[in-house]
Length: 113
Image (tube, rainbow, N blue to C red):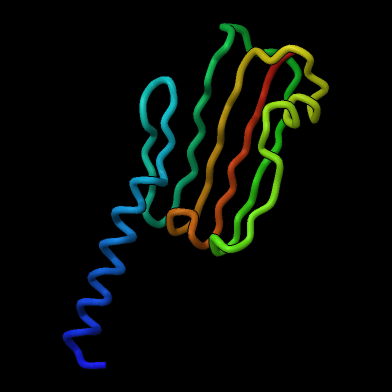
């Protein structure tokens, strides 16, 4: 491969990574959170009530190389993990390396009674 083709290929890959990095952000009630190109560790809450409950339940999904993913990130599972019958607050946490292409983790954390 000649130098010109290699240079164009590298530029195309970097451009695609930068554009897809915009998808690494989350959107919540307060608007979008920031997403990091190389690393992100973000937490965002969606309040259903002004009181945060004493019980806490969490569930997560994990992805490796964007090829393998597993986990139950649902509200019912998070509530069940915390023995919660009434959800008062929902928090979402996301972490990733290289926009989640290398490693990503999304968690749902619920608080309630």
